[in-house]
Length: 170
Length: 247
Image 1: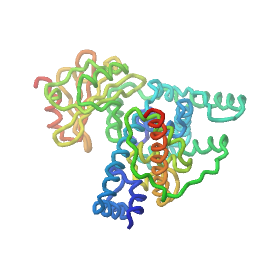
Image 2: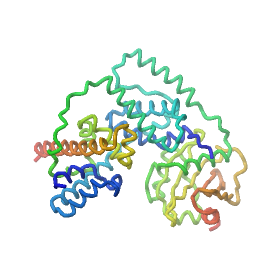
Image 3: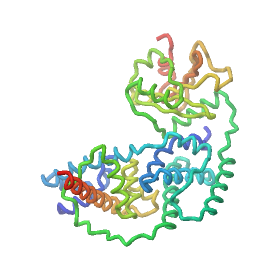
Image 4: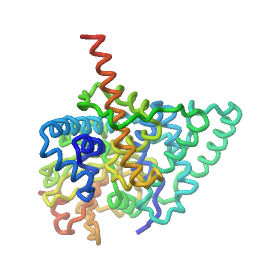
């Protein structure tokens, strides 16, 4: 059987997942489209050299994340973020309603940038920690730590937002 | 492990991701099982994780986006502060390169090629565009996305539970995909394409042509303006029964 991955089929299989990952990182449709297109463009140039075609999806995610980092480095001077102590854990996880999706995305954009991609992949795909580590090219322990701390930050931000909203609308 | 430490570990806990070999998670779950307060926190946390998954996975994808990728048309970016000229040069470069890379495949429009492509799709990780047990909703989705939706099911297929479907593309023509649950817990795929897309006349009209395979069996037939292809990892005899048009 032909082992070459057909470009059209590859797009068919993975463009929604890649777009959602890009959108979770950028929160802008135009940027998410651009990153996703660029990723497939790079695949067209280099991806065919990938020996193990079963890793095409991970390769695409890694490439998209690299592209995102390259672009962000050009435009953002990373603010000094107080990562905070994980001792400051939320007492209780916030309740998410279906209408809260924009709030969740906003909160995701406000967590420490180094946690964002790991947290996004953790929720968007059913990848194991090891697979996320492979995609983001960081050690397994770092992935676990970033997800835990990122989710903690996410919950704290959502609780703060929740309280602010309920304070305004008692 | 203290309650606080268990909570820290469980922040990264999600049933679909965390496996039983993760000792930290295992230990934290044991602590939670013995600690009512932590257990209550874990219940709420689990609900949060499920809701977060649902919400992020429902980020809408622009409906025209796949066609844009395939056409290789770059969109403008608001990410960079790159100068307008540099960006314009990049876009022109991308457009030229993409036009070369994304040109239509030279593959000929034969049924064998269509069959091979659909089998490749089944054998690799696939994704359904719509998950639904309602056949009408799947048809509605396919119709809305330009794929054949007026397909006729064989009697055996109409008795199978549908699980979803999707719109694929072959040679820039829409292909409808309908997925069914088989009693063996396998997935059965039905692909439907316009007869006009595949001019070769090897597709049987009256009876189904069943092809056994090492990993997949397929059955094909045509009916009116449509060509049908069934594929599933089951033996050819079982597939032939599903493709039987006289019940």
